[in-house]
Amino acid sequence: MAAAGVFMKSLNPGRTCFSQKVITQNIWRVFSSNAATKRNPEISVVIQENDPNQHSNAHLGHFYRLPESDVSNTLLHCLPKRFFKRSGSEKGNLYLMVRKPALQVIEQLKGWTPGEPQPKFVFYGEPGCGKTLSLSQVVHAAMKTGMFILLVPSVFSWVHSKNGIQLSKSRENRFDQPEESAKWLKTIRDINTDYLSKITTSEKYTWGKLDSTGKGKSLLNVIDQGLKRIDYAPDVVGVVLKELKKESSLKFLFAVDEFNGFFGKTSFKDTKDKWIKPKELSIVHHFTKLLDADKGLQNAVMVFALSRTGIQRNHSKSYEVSDLLGQKGESAVTPLTSVRVPEYSMHELEMCLKFYQENGFSKELNSDVIKEIAMLTGRRGHDVDLICRSR
Image (tube, rainbow, N blue to C red; front, side):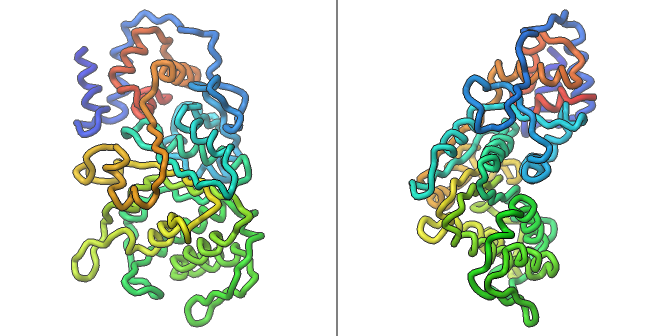
């Protein structure tokens, strides 16, 4: 069990980290002495149904393939980068496991109609257990039903941006992030081009001294203005969201990863050396306004994922919703349904290992190997991926 000690150091948060190469080398050393016999070879790991709206409890633990067009149009913007490096993806195929947290939200999504109380869901749990993947699965389901996907892929990339900030030219005591605003405009254009080409402005908007967008122009024209002149991008974000709030005929999914970043700390200071609050950033201000019960985004299901990955651990006591959101964050989304994303069950772990085995995991599996991996990884999907990724 000496090797196990090495893995506990390398995979547990807050302890010494070793390279992936070291992890992989040691895991094979641990398992090389195990007499291997395949387990449950009759189990089909991958299901044919690739629409998450058609999944049920019978599919839990199985994998489904993400259609390439769905990935390039939408899921590319919300799946974590490491997901594209996992086993199987090198063959041009991407797969997600059907898990209970996402399935629970998708069922509520299918049953909701505009005019009913607005549902809000928050994915939470320990790092590496699949909150972003659960959010992505919900996004996939919403996309399949034709909802407008209002996606924020990473709040931490805004509040801790390396691109810096500048004083807003249009709002006093506000700070703009032109680069981050332009990135988001491109994201929303890529995902919702068809809708944006049909939605038109309700009034004329002026950008600077020379440029303007007239009433009745498509939101694609507005977005293009922000992409051509990046200094306009922060104000363009505000205009796009303002116009979307007026679209009573559309059904929205407002999906935000690292949602607690809206209510935490930033990495920026003002000219007086005072820490800037997230709400003082123009882009954060625009999006948190959507949460207002009366003046915010009305015809929307709101699904958020929390994270401790991009914050100092001493800023929150735990991964619980109340600790990560704080009083202001909780009050902004109350009432809400908290959905915990747990570590893999033993069934999910076995199905995951079988999937990896079929895509480059060269060792056959037996109960001892599965139990060993469960202990070394804590059954966290991210850590299982580290040691089982194709070499």
